[in-house]
Image (cartoon, rainbow, N blue to C red; front, side, top):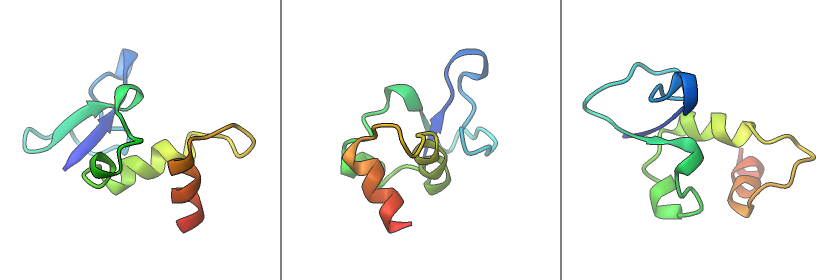
Length: 72
């Protein structure tokens, strides 16, 4: 599974709150090419939910974020 991680002070910690595991892959959320549907399919669903919810309702968001929110 691919976990999205924080940058900065909490760098490397999965944004979903899971313990970091050497069996999983990790990628900084801010730099992840999440517009790529194939990559998104490999990302932890909880990480995706956290990242999707990081956008305010009135904030411009990429199409894939609006699609995930509409499907939820």
